[in-house]
Each structure stands twice: as structure tokens, then as C-alpha cells.
Length: 196
Length: 80
Image (cartoon, rainbow over all chains, first blue to last red):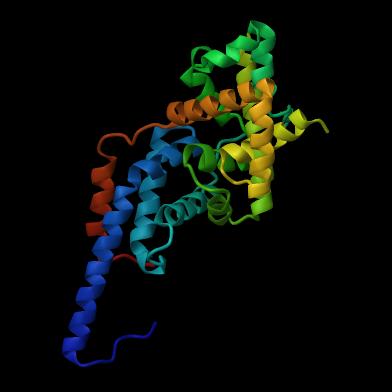
């Protein structure tokens, strides 16, 4: 974009319009902060890191607000900045390289619970009784980074497959396969606790 | 592949509302008649909700104020 080369009144109007657009952008972005934080918190291991990441994300977003296209998904735009910052800084949770992911089928957790407590266990919403909050948080943190990114965006952030693909800059098919494998791994980890 | 295997394969996409109309019909037709899969569908559905609610931590107090400060501190003065 070139510099304005216009008479004073038009230039002044332009400045006023831009200031108004900027304030509107900032307010809309801030209104999403809690949702952005929820995703950030599961990308990193500590609350402090999540706060830093969100602050850095907003600092960058406020600087480059003009590259956001009004009417498009602002939450996805913010998360794109956040995931890039997270990858750049090497702050991602580490998985031990010798830990080979095991894969089970989609009904694995349900079937393990049935084996230990009978088929009716599934009718009574016992999942809540058998899985602690800590176990879910810790199972998520043990997923390989690439899988966890997608699981967190879709299952915690409530993003569509297409949004997740755009945020992570990967093909839709890759989102689907990582989500599929990530959820299976998550359930395998949860099963270890649920039936122990 | 049995109908239950097929249903298992479709179930995550069904819960995500990412299936085609034809796939939705296939999944729903099977769920209507199969107790085994219907129980697992309900289980997966409640697991989703549970994971979402337990893993979602609210923003710590004070962070919103710090974010709001970024916009005024940043006004027109920051390097690219």
C-alpha cells in the first residue's frame, strides 16, 4: 500500500477511519483472549509459558492488524500467529524420542472399560467417574507434538478440520490423519488409567 | 469389513460433523439398528465433552489487563 497523497480533509478522514478500524480489531481480538488462552495452555507445559505465548501473540497481532481480512475467522488468524510463535521458539512439549506411539482402534477405550466393568458401563456416563482431570491433561501432554496440535485445536479449540489445516499450514488430509491417530493415542493413554 | 467396523471408522467424523451426506446416512442407519455401536457413540460423545471441559483452563487473572495494555503501549511506536 502506498502513502496517501491527498488533500488534508481526505487524509484526515482516512486516519480517523483507520483508527476506528484498529480499535474495532483490538476489541474483537481481546474478546477472544480467553479462548486463545485455552488452546495455548494445552500447547505448552506451564501456565507462565502459556501467558507469555498469548502476550507475544497479541503483541504481534496488534502490530500487524492490517494483514487481517475483516469478515474472516479472527480466532483462527490469532491461533495461526500463536502456533507459529510456539514452533519458532521451540517451546513445544517434548516427547521422548524412544517412545514409540502405540495405536489402537477407535473403540479401544470404550472396549477396555467394558472388559473391566461390563457393557452397561457405557450406558451410565461413567467416563466422568473413571477419568480424572489430571489424567486427561497429562494424556494430552504426552501426545507427540504434531498430533497434539491438531487434537487441541479441534477438540479443545473447537476448530473445523479446514480451520486447523489453515492454522497449521498443512493439508486437510494431514489434519484428518493426525487427528485420527492423536485421538487413538489419547484413548490408549486414558485406558491405562481408567482400567488400572 | 463389517457394518460395525465401518461405523467405527465413520464415528469420529460424524461427531465432528465433517462427513458427507451419504456417510451421515450410512452412520445413522447403522446406529439406529446396532446397540453395540450406539453405546459406543454415546460414550465417545460424552468423552468429547468431558475432555473439552476438563482440559480447558480459564485465563489467569491479570492477563486480560496486560493484553489490553499492549494495544496502547504499541500504538504507532513499534518496529516491524
